[in-house]
Structure formats: C-alpha cells, structure tokens
Length: 423
Ligand code: AMP
Ligand code: GLY
Image (cartoon, rainbow, N blue to C red; front, top):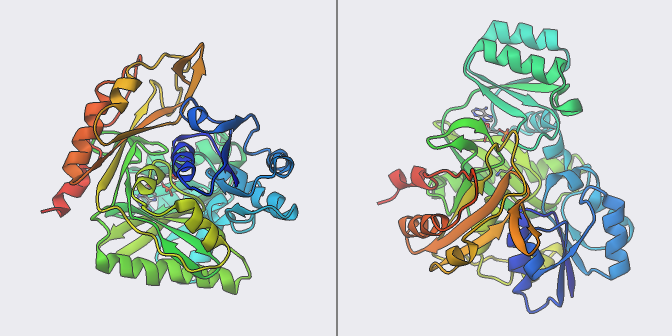
C-alpha cells in the first residue's frame, strides 16, 4: 500500500522510518521532506497547510493511508478535506483539533469535565489582563490562545514581565491573531512529562512515556523552544501516576469529547506537570510530540503501520515496548529559536551514524549540490538506544561529537532529570 506522511521535520522522518519497515508498504510519500526523509521516501512538494492540495494529491496518487505529523494542517482541517474525498487519514478533525488550536477552548473544556489543570482566566481586553496581573502578582504564565510554534507560552517570574508579555501579544501583535486573546494561568511546580495516546472515539492505547526538554539551555534555562531533546520511557511517570493520568485525564477527556459530540481519532498528547497534588495538564496537543515521537517510535516493537490501521478500523491493539531506553539529542542552529541561520554545511553525519545503537533523524536540513545543509531551527535528532539510560545518553553524545556545522548548539544534559529516580 501507499502511505503518505504529512510534515517535514524530525518527527516525520521518524514516522517515515518506522512505517517503511512495514511489509504492508509499497511506497512512502512525504510532503516537504528534508535531506534525511528524501533518502527513504518520495518527497512531494506541497505545503502541509495547503490541505486541499494535499488531499487532491492523495486522491490522484491513490494513497491508501495518511498520517499527519504537525498541528497546523490539522487545525486547518486536513482530516476533513481527506474524509470528504473518502480517504483514510489518522488525525483529528478541525473541530477536535481545537483542543490544541485554542488554549482557551482547551481550558474551558477541562473545567467543564473536571480535568486537573492550572487555575486560569481568559482575556480579550489587554486592560483587563493588566489589571488582573497587578491584582494577583507573579509568578504566572501568559499563554497566547492560538498556535505559536512553541513561542506562545511565557513563564513570568515578575509582574513586569507578565505585563510586558500581555502588551507584546495583545497590543503589539507579535504573534499575529494567535496572541490577541490570552490565557493567564497559575504557575505550577513539579516535573514535566509527556503522555501520548492513540485515540479512536472512547478507545485509546498509550504509547511509551517520555520527557521533553523545552528550554533552550542546560538546567532548563533560556526561552521555551519546540523541544531540545527527549528520552523514553520516563521514570517521572510511575505506575500510580500513570493510573491517575489515565483515569483523571485521558478517560475524562474522551468522555467529555463524546458528551460534547466531538469525534476524536488521532494522537492525543497530554503535556503534564506532575505536582505534589498529582498530574495536571499543561497543554493538549492533537498529534505526536517532536522530539518525543523519535524515541517513542524507536521503542515500539510492533509493525506500527499495521497496528495503526487496525486501530483506525476500530480493532483492539496492544503495543509492545522495547525494553531498551532511547534518547534524542536535538542539534539546533545558531540563532534558534529567534533567527536560525540557514545554508550551512553539516559535516560528520556518516561517521556519527556508524556509532553503535545510533539513529539520526533529520529535521531542518536540505540537500544543496549533494551536500547536507541547514535549513531551519532544529537541524538534527541524534538518537541512541541503550540497555540503560546512561548508555543511551553516552552513545548519543558520542555521535553528536562527530557532527559539526558553524554555530551548532545542543543541550548537554538530556536525560539527566531521570537519574534521580533511577537506582
Ligand atoms: P505550553 O505551551 O502550554 O505547553 O507551555 C510551554 C511550557 O511552559 C511548558 O512545557 C512548561 O515548561 C511551561 N508551562 C506552561 N504552563 C505552565 C504552568 N502553568 N506552570 C508552570 N510552567 C508552565
Ligand atoms: N515537544 C513538544 C511538542 O511537540 O509540542
């Protein structure tokens, strides 16, 4: 069968890699693509958010099954466009994608269904938002309502910072329409983790657990990014915490969607803060996380495509997890996340890929005169398996040390937060 992966980053390279291993597959296509994807899939030059053009392509080419990576096409209604043409696609409809597309919608949904999350208020008037901040003081978190590629949430340690963020989002419009409405929420303390499930109505199957590293710099300093590294599984989610996540969050969410007449089929990503009071939702995403998907997919032993199609059709499936750990170090370009530098040649990839247990997924790369060059903010995901987390980490960083390009930047502490939970 022919399979289409929508998107062109590290997550999509990992999806193409995993899906290509299925005996069911005759050919994998990918919209956009990068230097890594183009080695193993046919790259189709259509923007993922041009949803009708993608659907027309799928119809013309006779694509049997499509998996969507990023949020933007989902929020733009790619699933509706495919289903209108009778094409099979794994992802939520535009309506269901509001769980990610509007933070205000997601917060109000959680309130209606008693799903644990930070206390919050929604504002459409900057004066009212400013008054509220002056009244309650810091720390608090200001979040743009709409999609902002990881730049829409600002943890503010002072009142001044919060007031400034409100002005930038609501008055100066630095995020366009995405920031005209904001959610202001209580600052939660605890440890973050990512819990992703495949959903079909009220049925769900958990994927392996993981932990992202959202801040740019070591020790969780610097601005939020799309994610600078991840590993799987995470000991932050123990058995008891997982039970609570399922009962208090995932099951209430799926019940709530059903009660509201919203059909959800796709990946549901629960971004969590594990607090002293238990797990609370920081955000919902309606897709796999990037970079979490890379170590997660490395640890799924099933024929993932076959499992996904059976699940899509309404069957029960169980996923088998690799006992090994997987860890992903993201290498970003100079200037990420503000002004990434493009067009710089990447050296040492072949040597890095020869390291034991290492797989490299490309993100913002492209080919120029046969050479791999930078073409975005996050450039590479250097991933490794290990029998222990320590081994996975050592292997990944050994491979990272073989790679060079001007101004490259990566965190040196991916996985470190897990060690205190481990024997
Ligand atoms: P979000 O876009 O909602 O996932 O937020 C991005 C990041 O900001 C999260 O991964 C957290 O590190 C941080 N964050 C968001 N909301 C809160 C909160 N209520 N308390 C503390 N940190 C938060
Ligand atoms: N890594 C976080 C995300 O994909 O939103």
